[in-house]
Amino acid sequence: MIRRFLKILLFLNFVLTLQVAAREEVYLVPDRTNCVSGDTIWFSTFIFNPQENYRQNVVHVQLDKLSGAHITKVSIACNGNSGTGYLVVPDSLSTGIYVLKAFTNIQKDTESTVVHQRLISVYNRFETEIGRITFPDTEGKQFEKPEGIEVRSGPRSVVGSRQLNFDIEISDELRENLEQLFVIARLADPVSENFSQMWIDGQLSDESSSFMPVREQNGVLVTGKIYSPIDGSPAKGAVVLLSISDTLPYLDYCVADDMGRFYFYVRDAYGPGSLVVQEFTDQAQKNKIELFENYIETGALKTADKIFTPDERTYAEDMIKAAYFKRFFQGYSALASDSFSLYKSFPNPFYGPPTRSYYPELFIDLPNFQEVSREILHGVQYRERRDDVSIRLLDEGTQTIFKDEPFKLLDGIPVFNPGIFTDMGTTEIKKVDVVFFKRFYGDLNFDGVMAVYRHQPSLSWIELAEGVELFRYPCLQQQKEWNFRNKNQTTEITPDFKKVLFREKWNDIPSQKSISFDASDIEGDIVFEIIGVSKNHNLLQYHRVVETK
Image (cartoon, rainbow, N blue to C red):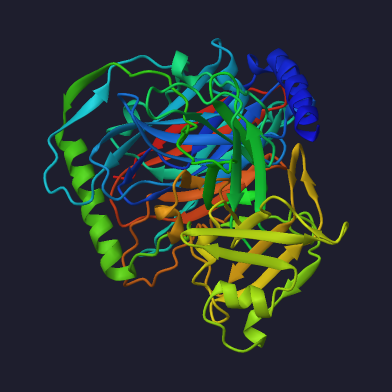
């Protein structure tokens, strides 16, 4: 009944989102337009939608090849209509031009959706010679240059200092029209300056359509299909379970539709999670389960080979050398992205408060589960008959033994083969929760629950379990502070090879602002890019190249 009610709510959500999906637009503002493989791109996103009730959302940002092939993706939770995040460029990515795309899930529901794409040039840090590059042969658009912004060089610093000074003036008329202002100063890459002001509009292809276009808020929609591996026919009506091992285990279920498709809305989960997906059945599990990758498809861009000019080659080689020396002088520290956290709304597991909790380690050493159940787990009936193992629980409501197996869990993961517990003794088991009553979870019902937790939880047993699939799935990105400093953190004798020199966000727009930052030891001109978010939900873009030679 609860599942049917949720489906009704999702359907109503679907009808409402149809009215706004076509008009929703997502823009991406990266802190750079060029980088070296292994660098981290920090970005801001903006969601523009005419309906204020739909401003909070989850934005997906992906890095693609010009051919449309996917490389990597992150999902961030926005605060209101804007959000920030980062994307780590793979260290092995070859030299070339790549595409950054940002989208929301409901945008995949309408063919009229426009994806505003940004280009970025990447130089592989292991290459020694760069002579040509595949370049996009397509036209883009530029946003309106705002009237009322001026950037002037300020007073020069003392001789020998790295510090650069600039004055930014903003007219009162423009200030009244702006909600936010981003100021970015970075090195000018001769290659990426060909497209640094360009936004390329992409149209959705048929592969992008979503069969459940719900609006994601503080969570991600996990979708997939279940089907017969023999003939590929969909397993219509199959009950699919999704579980996450944790101190308080997470469980959800979904009934596959006519196409064998299922969906789970995982809220408040951050980082890459180990999701276990399986069919809920006591029969031999022979169906195959796959998860869909949540990418957006916009097709390939037209390309043409481009031979580097001397200035372009020199800059690229300087970037690669700088990447080497930066690691030599400062080492390399990757952002920790492997941690996973799941917000817990309730103090008890999904199966509710246990009737009994047993701690076998407090008792004498017992070598296997049969001895544990006999000596410690009173009310748990464990039987071995030849190669067959069965478990039954006491029903304290009727003071009889349940006829069917209980719902069994190992470290929070549902288990349908009771033989997995056979060799577990008191040295391995940390705790056993037992529910000696009938339990209901949505439309599902269990003849009691037995949950075994080990001292050292592991999902390695899944590799040998038939019908159980383990997926490493990227949930929401953990929020991190950039900790960017507009001043060099190195000593005067230590080189600094940064590519982004200055970045700040102003919510309170000043009429005049003096800024200063330290130059990089990589030679090159400086690009000033000022992105303004107007109150009528438009982006304004100021772009100026300051020569330093």
